[in-house]
Length: 300
Length: 224
Image (cartoon, rainbow over all chains, first blue to last red; front, side):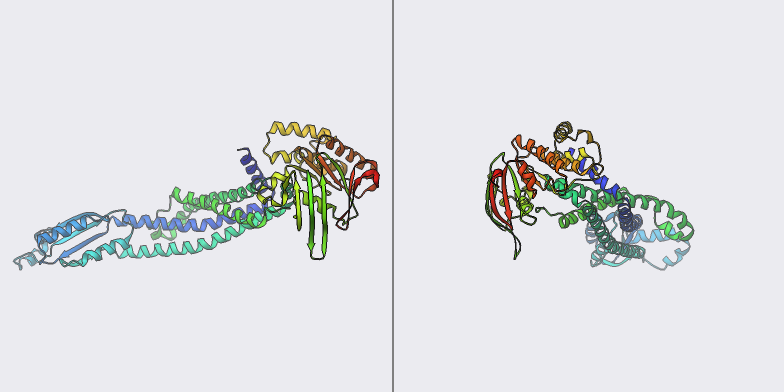
């Protein structure tokens, strides 16, 4: 405990001793974490939006007249058993005709021409709100469509496909940019710790010669990286929150549609902590590799 | 306490810093290690506290073969040896108290114990009045005494001083050797590297003389 308290104090002293370098480093870490944070946030909102729209995803499977009731019952059970499905309904040929009559009474005269209902029976499927994965829904529908009693499928999924595509692009671009910026971040912390080791090389040598253990010497440097990364993550989270609060004010005038699509106002705690944890991990990792390279355990 | 068996130290193929050194130092001895500049004094001392490795031969410190100590366990050896460096190696931006306390702090000793030991050690070297001074604000002689205090505060078995009087006038040099004598009287094996023969003649102690890396003399002071 005493050892850690000393190490933390030493790390904070190091940070304050080289204020310019460390604050510059902090700003760069915050920026490099902010970019993935923004992409993560956009991706999160698109996910939520897709999820919200998923409540309205409906598929209507029109059945062939040749299908018997046992086959239909079996199909209903199969659809009902799928986890993506929220609700299943069966509309018989007669029911379809009644619905048509109720919805379009002015067109009733057309039906008078037919002895039986001209409408096919159908199975109406509503999907769950958490069914975020449009691909899964499509795959399920394709699977059901193969059945011989299904004549055709009506599906309102085009918009979901488009949003999924945007989300994929956002995730990919975010991942690509994040990877580059995280490498930059690691490189910067690595060099800041290297500079601090260089500044304190005489002190490190003295500590070694008076019998300090390797961990006694290395821990403050490790903590220094950890603290810089942690603070960088906090700063990035704070900046992201500011952007989220400020941007919609402008977005309202410029991107009305975008504003409708995305709920800008909330920063999920998950994203905030992800930034802080990623920052801390990067800080710790960078100082670790810096220490491995520049502080040897060998004599002298 | 310290034994060298056929120890060689070669930095480059043609540069042999030490050649076939055999010597034995008993517990509690006081030794002057002498020789001209470049004779190998500092190298020999560095081999004792393992800042250098011998090219050949074996070194036993308190019956432990120091060449076999892994880097991770080196601190155990260093805690048994107090070192006074030629260039002091003090932290100039820290106080006298902070410098002297370092060996105890790295061992995790309690604050009260550290305070007590720092006070008594500073009294031993006559620096109690400079306790709160920045090390950069005291004289060279006082800095040397801070270095001695730091070397002995951890109660080492061996005290090594590399040219501890190199930058001091005769009067101060004598004072420093008297302090080291006092420390030696408490049972600490003391080895002092110096090329100052006048100083050596003032203190009748065992002398080990090196010349071009070879041990050329190992006798009591009056024999010179």
